[in-house]
Image (cartoon, rainbow, N blue to C red):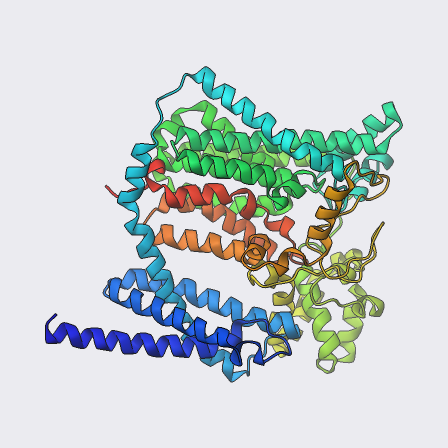
Length: 610
């Protein structure tokens, strides 16, 4: 080592020391310590954190190409967003408000961004260095081509394996998790009084099965079970197709086995497979649409020459849009991206998208007309403005003039405004006067803008409070705390709606397993287990997804980012929703094996730079 190299090494060691020390000092700002301010600072644990940071930063600075401006920029943006989310999330969780005057926040932001940027770059460097190792492993486990008959046999076995694994849980929570507006959807069919508040395809599917089975057996529980079995078949089919796709791409057998066991036993997967909410089928369609978009990106010529592949794309897109309204918004933006990206086949792409949208509007419009469904609700798309006006009214009523208050009361009466819940807009939005709003939308839009200009931070905090669970990993999901439903009152956790709404009745056949799922749903059981708790966190799952996306962008795997973009667009629609719940971002769990497979086995998806 010459003198110049020695000096560079000393400088890097000093930089590592400063960054590690500053980062450790700032760590309390992203830890949810609540009142116990000494929980980290006056602890030997902080010393271990400092040593780990020093080692990691020092190692990273000595092994990463410091001249890679593009890599540092991408990692820096990701780290900045993550650090901001952590700093804001802590304050929102503890005080329901981000204190933008907190000097510690603004000092911690650049320090922790710098620290995380270095760590992210090191991890990317590690993943890139696994290229040769992954190729050797893939060569060692390469399997001979099997006859199609045997491959189909494997798919059939996997399909029934899933059903067999889920069956004991269905018996334990019998007749299933009939929850999340399930009663409302059933009653629409039973009373023949329909609205477009819920997707009519799901309303007819859920309510139709229950009513038909009840008419024959005089049992609502059997009707609910029949719906659950139909959904189990759909979900099992979707997962089987994904695993078959990974096998066709020759993804390592170990990864496929882990994915299969994950789908079969991980509680979040099982809970929503046995849940009547529309989110499950929507997410299966979104997952399969991602696979279709991957196929499109890997071999455009083959995709657009195959009527089967294009038909599959249309089916997945149509199902996704029909089962959740935000699906149509996300796919509309996605359509523009697809046309611009696949310029060579833009005519076929335009035709495909035109068929998809026309089919959606034809099915949706026909059902609305035939069922005479009422379509007069605005509160779903106005969730954020309603919450912003309500919060400002509660905490800064002085900015409203008497005329403003009178205008506000026309759409939100005083009793509604008094029900403000920072984490949940439902108590207020359900009392929103749609007819008054429809009579003069401009008038109320002007009120919203006027108050927003006076209290922009109040508006920002109102929106952050209903969305931060989607991007802050340490969130305890308790948005329904204190709400009484049919058989219990939510307390510590609202993670999952463990419930059987009327007319169903819980009749567990395996009580101990039923109790395990009750604890996962309504208690902070999993949150008490380090590391494992993050597997249940929507915020953590989002940042894992963001990490994969940024890594693929860094590696210039743009055709992989196309299907990932669709997931991001769906996520952007839900952060404008009424609250944060795992069911709205279920794709992060359903799609996890696909995300991991694409990242770890790039060569299987045609992603290696030649």
